[in-house]
Image (tube, rainbow, N blue to C red; front, side, top):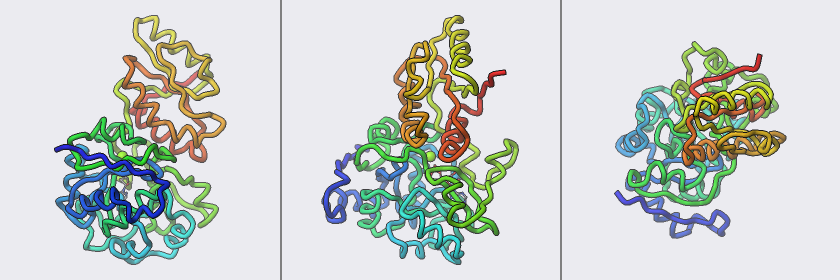
Length: 347
Ligand code: AMP
Ligand code: MG
């Protein structure tokens, strides 16, 4: 399969009639796969009502079939095509955070392919805050199931190049709309439990949600390592660069000492840090990802930084840890998953 690339400037007027968007949408209508930018990461879209279209997502990504997909919509009306019995708290969340990086888990309508929801009786839905994603979904007239557009287990793609690195020749098309903004995926919140429960931390923080609807729960699996996650996707190792990654808690001098020991044993070593400390470390490769003083910039660049190590020949990567609050919760969740939970602590 030859993957077509549609270049679209997200700032053009009236994207909904833009020929490249119309053509990309026609692929979706024919049940083919189209990758497209959202405000979080690039998504790999398919018609959510078609079992065969959705099946192709799992094949192209090599994604485990028990990991359900998020359905993307462009208007609130489309919600009624995929979900029912919508609780009032969900409407409040939609009013505040849509379009945006918040995914709501709601009771599912039968018409949604069970392949989308991995057989669950709930469906995860969000409205992305990106003009290209919205125009494409609207032009297709369909709810679009879309996981991140990477091979399963790899860091999520934040550029069309990342998508092609993983999926060229495996999908019908990619809409190249430039780099994405938030960098980490949406927050997933279950609205079917008595108290809404965060199943995956992401672009909207717990603090932001609680300001709007009061106290929420956090899925036990996010706090206790042994618990079984309610969001099936959370159990897989994810986002991993090719070299083993270890998250190091402590001072820069402790991290430097760890690096020195590995280098003394003959290994080449990479360090993942931020702009503020880029010049602090002596290692074979030092990659800075955003600024520690503004963790949103770290979230934005994290996956690009993890992928950048794959272009080097380091044997090991050591990363600084980040504060576990605000957007830092999503950053640490992704970083620890990328590390397969390998961590070191300064005594
Ligand atoms: P991804 O598309 O790879 O960013 O992952 C989507 C996330 O949403 C995964 O963690 C899924 O397990 C989660 N998810 C999707 N649908 C549901 C659902 N019905 N209930 C709970 N979690 C879900
Ligand atoms: Mg993903």
